[in-house]
Image (tube, rainbow, N blue to C red; front, top):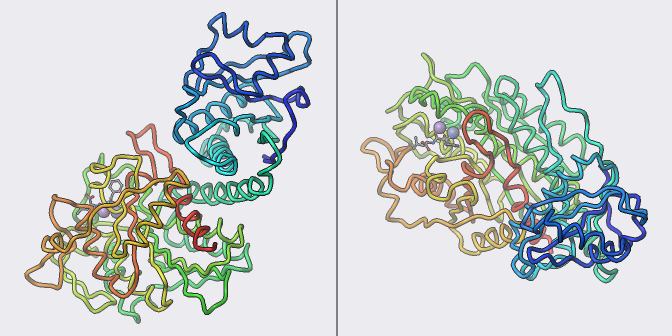
Amino acid sequence: MKFSISTAPAEKNKKNCLIVGIYEDGKLTAAARDIDKATKGHLAKVIAKGAIQGKTGQSLALFNLANSGFEHVLLIGCGKSDNITPSAYRKIITSAVNTALAGKATKAVCYLADLAIDNQSPAWKVRQITEVANSALYRFDDYKTSKEPAHSLKEFTIDLPDNKQKKACEQALAQGMAISHGMTLTKNLGNQPSNICTPSYIAQKAKELAKSYRSLSIKVLEENDMKKLGMGAILAVSQGSAEDAKLICLQYKGASSKKAPVALVGKGITFDTGGNSIKPADSMVGMKYDMCGAATVLGTLRAVAELKLPVNVVGIIPAVENMPGGSAYKPEDILKSMSGQTIEVISTDAEGRLILADALTYAERFKPDAVIDIATLTGAVVIALGFHATGLLSNNEKLADDLLRAGKESNDRAWQLPLWEEYQEQIKSPFADMANTGGRAAGTITAACFLSRFAKKFNWAHLDVAGTAAMMMGTSERMATGRPVPMLVQYLIDRAK
Ligand code: BES
Ligand code: MN
Ligand code: ZN
């Protein structure tokens, strides 16, 4: 679908599907008022009949308005005019797109960029509309034998109340599209089942991505290479699987090579059975999403390359399958990591931190200015923050603040948890330098404590996305979200300034 922006009044767009707003007190937005006038008060009459109250996300489709030439008008409820939050705005836009699709619209013009949301600029609204509309259009039906027919919508125009901010809005549209493309890549990889999406599959997709942008290059390390580097932690997790582990390393060059890069390290467990510390059957459903950190790295790089951001970024993805069995690693095994530090395995289900440990050490060679890892690392973060906030832990306050701010700006928020030294006690081992688990208390924090021991040489932040990268409400409702691509792209946009 083609997205664009324009500044044509509703009167000029009569033949299109016009998306306009109504507030909870029955008041109309400016574009809706124009249509009401042109139809001699038709909208006011419909509202007086009680057909729509203006509650957030409500919708009413009107066709062929009497003698006025307007063919398709969507009234969308916007709630209280002085209190539209960013998340209510997303609801409003989602409802608008879904109602347009239900009405088989082919060309839609959205007049919802003039709503007042906190203190957000028109450009912010254009980007949100672009991202939310793209998300509403997302489908994953690779494996459905009877597919829904393709949707009718061919063009989506975002109307601006005036021309003043046109340039900023054009840029916001381009950013929104790039972020959406990145999120779609991330979602598609996440939603693939693990019998298709193996470590080699992720490596293949990464190669395809690198091929489509000149600014991207790629190197894939095989198990033999990892052996030479002493990556005992990654190899231990992989040893029970019939699939070969891959360490995928992408480089995006958008600035002078003198500029230190940002390294993004993504957990790529293509399926997490728990290994010999096997998960109960119910907890295993959803574990195909355990590579969403890896998928986020690819989605973010895709967006950055599309936007040609003047930054340098390295993407590092340890891709591994965690299986039980006769050749799999076991509790109480002691591993030697690439850093030289030894690790006693308490649970083979705490595998994410093991593969990240070696990947973080590997990141050192790029002399990064900042390292951000993205991982579906702990169930505990879901208990702490639910499905709305990504857990953030960092050894550098400036980096943490920059990411928190980027999350707010992009409506893809994180919440910081402490990384105090007191918590380090919990991962002591009587036999090795550390244990790979720290008990039930503060599970997200002790996981980050473990990672911090492999991140001493750089500014580092950890994003625990176990609650945000995918919706997993039972077996019938599961879907990758594409988060936290928006936060990370925003962070890199801010750095490029
Ligand atoms: N991949 C899981 C974390 C997870 C849980 C992601 C639920 C998404 C939803 C991770 O590898 C894991 O198993 N973590 C354990 C750690 C424990 C053994 C210390 C957990 O959270 O139970
Ligand atoms: Mn696990
Ligand atoms: Zn896992």
